[in-house]
Length: 293
Image 1 (cartoon, rainbow, N blue to C red):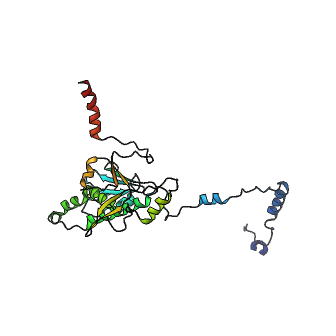
Image 2: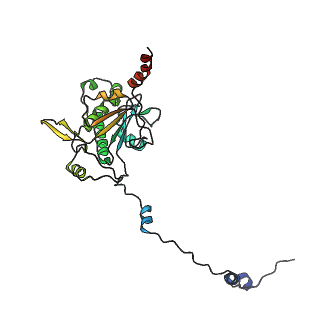
Image 3: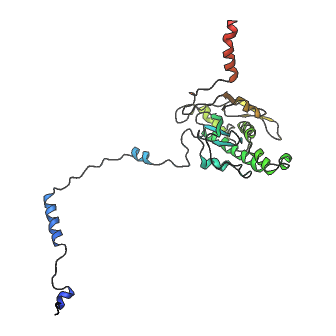
């Protein structure tokens, strides 16, 4: 017995029943709109020009205030590598640019804090960040030349391993380069006082904080192939972790002041707590004994 029933043609094609789409949705929207009150506009506070300027970013071509007034010299305690930095903490992205390939496994793969110590801090007067950045550039250039432009016969007679270790020993060269740059030597060195700096000093202009920019004394600098000439140089202060390091240089000009002990982190200029020299501490310890005798 056949239980299947043939459906009409219209029902099979879907024309049997027809609904109007969106009819119920339209009626629901109408009821919701009728019951909810109209939203009141919220007043927007006006933004003045000062707030807009605060949100704007500082252009990268303009350095932040105080940038370059201090220069840090970091030293590797085992290999005597040197890294110059404008910040107390080294940044790996910038530190590795100062390394050159001197041999297999002679260049550090990463910066370990337990292997690096600050050797010296060079400080310039307030508002003289451009002088510090100029010294930073000169020191990096001289360091690169020491690594790549050597013609010493003793290095030529060494093995590759020994030559790489000798080139990595940059501690003495760094101190000699620092004395050379702070003496105003080199083309475009901003340690030398220009006529514009003299005019600012005579007019009594200051930096953004209102501090006067001092002009420094006159020192004699011997130029190559010329007679001794008096040149005005900017004042610089060098803080040493070890006082014996400054004797790597043959001479220092009069515009450089030496202080034993590094400034503490997070302190401003003029507020540093400087560690006394070892000779001073020994003399202070022996003073009560002599009085008692």
